[in-house]
Image 1: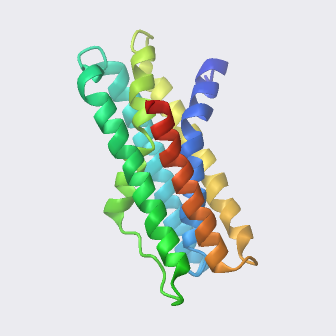
Image 2: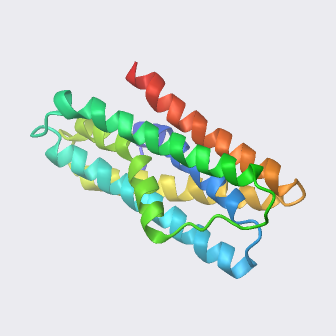
Image 3: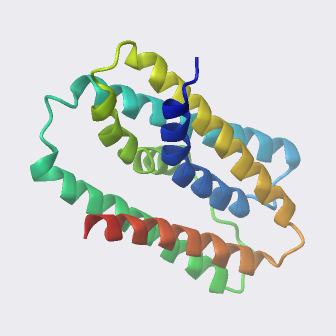
Length: 185
C-alpha cells in the first residue's frame, strides 16, 4: 500500500518532527523509564496524528484556502515559536540549578502543529489523488515511526552532561526556526 512517492513525501515531512522529538527526548533524560516511555509515546502519537491531519486537511481544503495572504505570516510565527523554544532551552542550560523543563500537553500540541504546517501545504498536491485519506494515514504512520526512532535515540545520550544536551536541543530548535525563516526568504 505504501508507494515510493508516499514514502519519500512522508520521510521528508517527518524529519523535522523526528528532530523535534529527539530534542524533547533530551529534555526528559532524568525521568523514570516508564514515564519516558509514556511521554515518548504521547509525543510520537501527537506528531503522527497532526502530520496525518494536516495532510488530509490540505488535500481536502487546500483548493479553497488562499495561502498567499496569510501563509507567510503564519510561517514566520512558526519560526518564531521554534526560536523562542530554543532560547528557553538555552537559558535553562545556562542556569546552575537542576530544575527540569516541564512540557505540558498544550505546548506539545503547539509543537506538533508547528512541525506539521509543511504537511498542510504538501496536502494540496495530493488533493486530486483518489483515497487521499489513506495517503494521510501512511504519512502519519511514517512520522510516528521516525519520531519513535528520534525519541529513542535520545536515551543513549545519558552519559553526556545534561547542560550540553540542553544546549544541543536548543541548537536543534534554532536550526528548525532558522530553516523556517530561510524557506520564507
